Length: 327
Image (cartoon, rainbow, N blue to C red):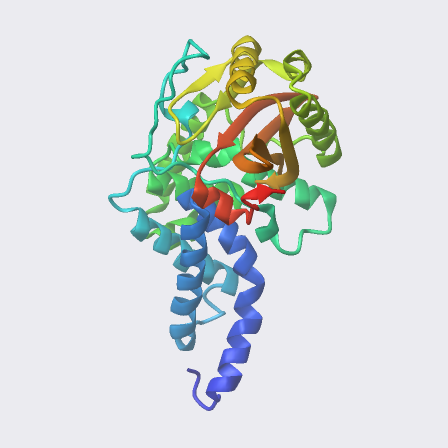
């Protein structure tokens, strides 16, 4: 605590300086960890560590933002030591050829979690800033980050996403500038090979929503041909925690025929958003009610769905505060 300053005053000063950064720190920790639960815990840990060290904070050496990012990034790196990455099935295995193949559970894998839009908090007022933020949270980008080593991930986020200088990133990561630049180049190369552009902006939200609304309409009518018309030719369908994933609109259509044959054609859907992308909670008929079946997140590009990621994990359902049934 600063000499001559009461604990109450110091606490108020710290909150005023640190709390405005909580939201962006949550996004950063989520990008690092691939887990919403862990990101929330690490942001809280960051704030506690920062408060305990607040008497040593020197604004002439670093801004509050830089200081908090240093604490948060190193908290994430410490947590990631010896840990498995959080991928999506399409990032770690080969696609399945047969849409009628038995499901292969991957319950041993800590899969990437989607990010509930309700955690965004106050959104940027400027349309360009909002588009950039949604781009950084899009599921494909966060999934690609999980394929990088922890230090490569941190270097790319600090330099290319957050705009810190090489010297600032090196100080945060306790690395040399040369080592940071090397990690950054390797990270950029890996993202390029994965076909992910960190700077790509998503389609305007109304355009995405319009495509997905038409998809949901066809889904509720069990109209497979209508669904397929809204898909990109090379669309990806994946379903963590299952290893099964498919490429192509033909395989997607065959899989949807299987879904309706097995689960019936009486469904309800609740439109929501995840990772800044349109999504829906799908409920299938069981007895006299519809029960929660999956959370489906859609990636839309150039007026077509290029990826559907289907989550069937109770932890994810809880994160999104989804009702277990619709009467």
